[in-house]
Image (cartoon, rainbow, N blue to C red; front, side):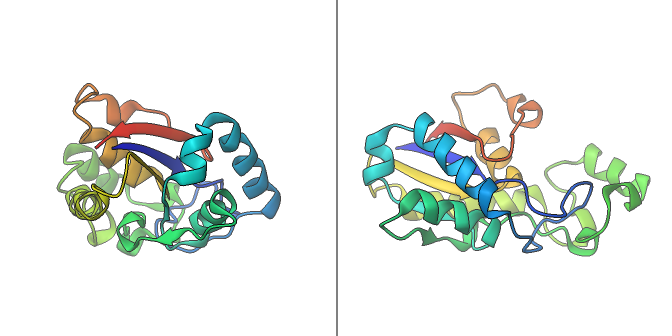
Length: 178
């Protein structure tokens, strides 16, 4: 199965903020611009026939619905961003340096803000993949940078370190094989 993983447009008031699961909205014009660009980039048959899944957060759901229309996007709780616990809503520069360093030392096992690790996100990702794996030749998922990085880390067609260095722009897409 070919998966098209799309990062949501830039959220309002999110710059410099650890927003993880905070449900920050997106300006309608940003959603429309991202949808138009993606319609040019993704194969027409995929947009017309593949199921379109979305994180439950509005910054993803709005774009997923714009791409799916007149069909409905399918909400998948497993596609939600990592829960950053006590870091959520804080400016990144206000997170203690020693906590950021501990996360950098153990990217997979450390629980930023005391809640969820990348291993937890990976387990959700694998659960979602198992659920959709036999639904067709392709699927679209509108999700978050953390989930996309986990997917890249588990994509056997990529170098093992590529996931950490891969630039994931707002409104962009990445293709992986599942």
